[in-house]
Length: 223
Image 1 (cartoon, helix red, strand yellow):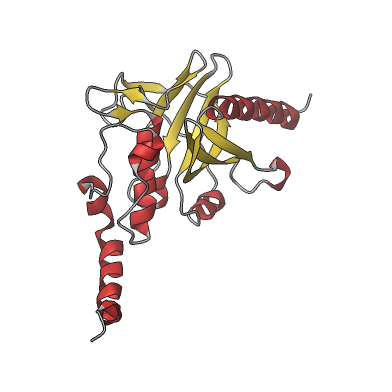
Image 2: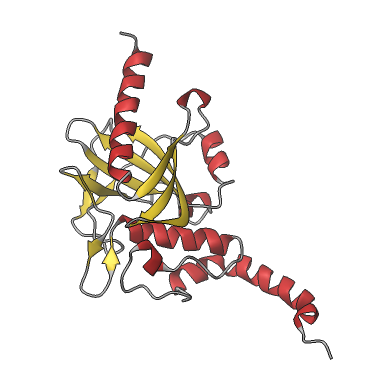
């Protein structure tokens, strides 16, 4: 069997595993692999039986080198945090920059069926380098950790999805985002300026505000 066929089979197995675990929490639209557009799936998050309007992109890779455990519990999402990297073509990264929704790379260990993910929104927005963004263990024993319950808040993958959605909104100069309660998250207030996100996108938000000021007279009540 040629190297190409072996790699293709591994890729298909990895995609099938990711699609299987995501399907419980999202409507998964697979992209025709023959077109090789740089994204494997476009998904819409579902809370229970209610589809949300939150879309996200997924690229699937199979694990070739072992990841290094950083933290047993990440302070961001309460998931295990790992150090590692994958190779993504610059042309693919440029393509992803055109999306106005979050993009994730899912890394599949075919031997253990463990699945990790790396958030790419901050990377695409030029906020951090890809080597600085960790991987998180999100599937173990066939369980997708979409929600991890803390004392006061819900964490897990959905928490990261929500905040990367806010980043995509702020990158367009938009302050509002989807209600986190509609995603199934607990303890994250809606219509809130989250300082960590706001501070990263002040320039884009300021640009929108200046445009509003230019046209504010059109919003004044007529006399």
